[in-house]
Image (tube, rainbow over all chains, first blue to last red; front, side, top):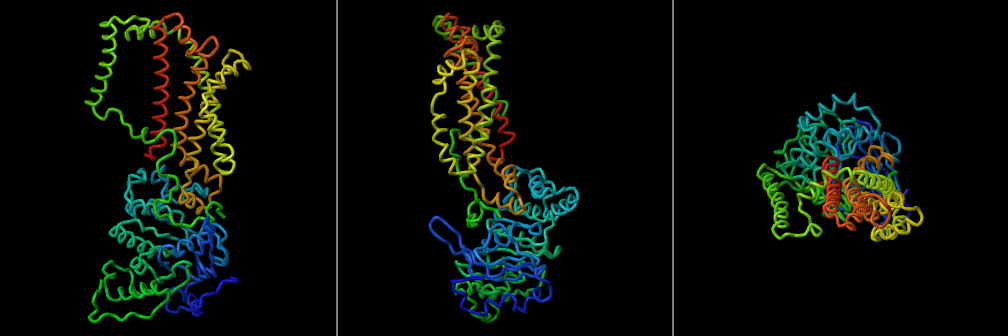
Length: 296
Length: 285
């Protein structure tokens, strides 16, 4: 698949995604999405930018996977390729066994900064995907109302995005995405622009929605705590070009709470992941501090 | 696959909009939408009071300094003439309005269409832009004598002049609007499988609408200027022509009554587009 480019030196990396027996989801459920040897170069005015290098990954149905890495590591590129918005230089993406060559109706995307259309009110924004897909929104109306209620936006239907807070805008964009019932949700640093408190609130909301609906969620973030809080597995990428550094299965019980993010178990994973990002590869387990001290 | 996104690195750090910072155009839209008339009764009273003072002051000054009517007639005289002699002005007003509307409709639709098409092809835009700039900067009244030679003294040369004056104005402003491609919004539409046509109607056009409205406003005001100017250059009717006639007859109250009429038309155009902007483009503010 990839010629003339040195393949990742550590051969075990190639087997990690499938060989990860610790993932409870990966073992039993069928594969929803697969990334096979994804490599991506961007052509820019200053030359080629190498964004992704031979990255392979499998995501089980109903799994919550976080893709984590430093800025510019190609994690958004990977997500955009999975959504069919970008094509890969080499490699391919499979969704339910068929290659992704363009946007697919089974996929819903949630973008950075909510990405609402400022000239439409909330209701019209939620109707936007239906207009594009030429779907009659009538059968979905009850669903949309229930979703609005769940995220606490009932009564705000006629408001314009500029009249809503950042958190409310992002909640509206979650409703917009869930409204047409996609089976896979791709989230591109959705809460990056929100303050820490709103971010906690949004993470709890996403966890709740995920646990209720059982959607497959692939969530890109550069926030380690957020990734561990949400994910079944955290996929850590190396700095540009993005390669697979390590996959961390997160076995913490659900539903997770914000308090849990301050427990020694949690912080141990945070440190392991931070070490992995610094060294570009997994450096082994971090010794838990004596007395379970919270060193942050 | 979404062609416009292919080589775009998805790093929408700050809002993601390209060219969304401070519109580069002849007019600043915020001046339109941020303007609020009379927030309270007291404010309205002050505004009305100042207007009365200005007009009343002019009336008093004309009387006090005994200014000759052929230099500046009394404001009350101008108002009286406008009302009592309106039958004299009405046919000419109709002609000017007809020329303005016809010319503007032709110019604006061509300008809008051209802007929508050429902004999709950056190279074509580079080729065409110098000529559009030439049309924008050249006073179209200068062409009127030539147009009269070809089309006679009727309305046709004026309509052409109005179209030539307003069209490029509409075009350059609309083009500025259409060039505001917010890739995040386009990606959003693409993720739902939008066609290029849907991207245009559902994303690019609404995004461009505030600038299009600004273009239409500027274009129509330029059209009015050009219509009146063209009527003054030659012909036998229209408000511009009547200005020349009354000036030569030293009927100054008639002259100023027409000036007042033209001013009201200009303000009318402005207010019309102000409300259109409020209704369709206030999200921009």
